[in-house]
Length: 114
Image 1 (cartoon, one colour):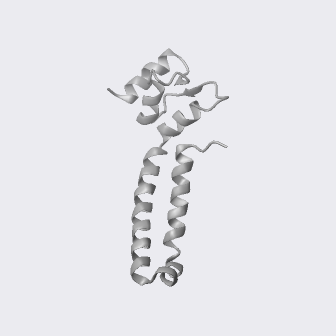
Image 2 (spheres, rainbow, N blue to C red):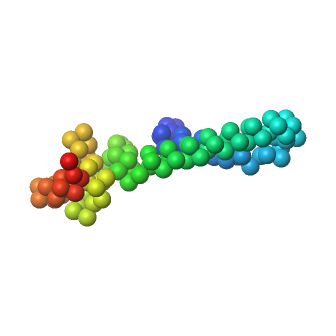
Image 3 (tube, rainbow, N blue to C red):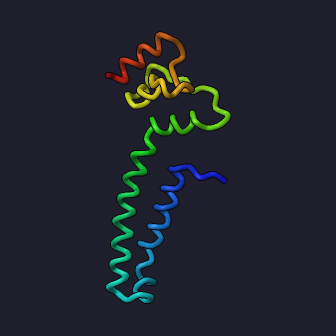
């Protein structure tokens, strides 16, 4: 089984959340001072990891991830795309993502910006 980057980040978040909710157990096992350090550190890391996960799982990244999957032929983007999605559609390194026709591709370039 292959785990994607986003799945690995989500697993990390689950583990850190479990540690944060285990304060009472850690207090019994390690004492209040060590438990406070463990839970505080896990909480901080969980916040950072969650923030990174949100950034990496945006719409544009999701389209890149899906286009890289085996079995996906082409993702067609229309002129209602957000700037992030439009930038993926006009990116030459993303050959499986693009506009339905030349006119849409021109519109997507203007949406994507410079």
